[in-house]
Image (cartoon, rainbow, N blue to C red):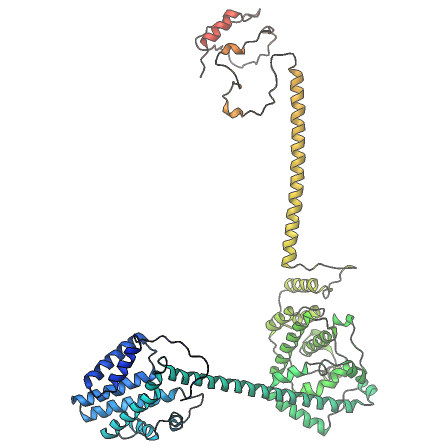
Length: 575
């Protein structure tokens, strides 16, 4: 078997070391049943460690050696031995050739021949599976040949390196072959796609050449009437295009959307006598009538609901890709084709009162006549995903023609948002002069919020500063007024920062426990009549301090004396 030229891979094995491997190999191929049983027990331990990853060659060797041990023991009859040998041989052929099978089934004889397995062994497996059971003699001979093959192709190859090397190399080779086959399939698919793309371009170019030959010298007639009927060559080209569309319509639409086909070049427009679109036409894009009639034979031939859906889908995808490019020419014609398809499917009320002649003239320049059930929700999402100058117009067409229209207020809001985002005037809504509505994104809203927060914080800090300054000015003016009033008296205003909550009511910092400190040296007297008296509704009673008999005041006015003050002092209780 071939070996891989790349570096050897490391493997996790279930045997302890190479000595155990060599011992099991020697005991398996010995003639002593006891040694073979010991080797089979070691392989059972390996399988328990491997779980489901036991090498195929090890598993097949153990099955065949187990048949030899039972055969030599004499405890199993001949028919049972044939079944055991047959099952082991069938498992060997199936498992060994399984890795060679690809996506398509191949004969086992050919696969076995690639691995140097004798063909009669495969026939023996076929007899065991489908025909009459072979004799015990042929089963023993097949077992011996297969064991020799395993020893030569697997066990002997492990002596020069890590175990499992040869079969892993074969597995790697199989994987390489599968990769090569996959690459060949991909290359073949690309070649077929390139050939199909080339065929589509050639067919469309042939159609254009025939149309340009027809329109030579007929520009004035084409403006007044429909396009002439296709000639025989044109009919053959249209039939070829229709057959190609049945096989790969997606590729045909992709080619149609390239420059030079549904999106004309400037030279093509000059040949057809059409004016190039300007920026003003983006708001309500329409195709030049001559250019529309140029492609009508092809589009009418391809007309089907599936093709119309595919065309609209591809047109919106192309329009979305153009949002990052400044290509008004492509945007104009892509939007115009979308608008043309929607107008063909339109079922407006204004068409109900037209005459037969008007209807005939209107129908002759339409891609299709019968109304198609379009996927409106999908089209609405695709239109909103491709914002451009034409989006409000296309959105208006979708909203007007939907099978289940949205509520009126929802449609108006959606159109308004679309016009704001695309910086264009919404349909049926006249904007004021120089109307420019800014586009709000998530980032701009975050910036606006941060700016407003900074502005409000600045205003708040200024207000706090002004408030603190005014309060300080008010406090200072109040202090000055009180100081002026107390000038010349033993009392004064305290301007120190004192935590008054630490002092009980009626006590000031630095005050002693003796109440006489509250006495002043200079004081004035006041009569009772000069003092303000509050009138009471009931008979008032005089209360004196505890332990002090206060004398009754007479109308003449009783003054406090030093003895009365001393009595008060002795009767006061300080808490």
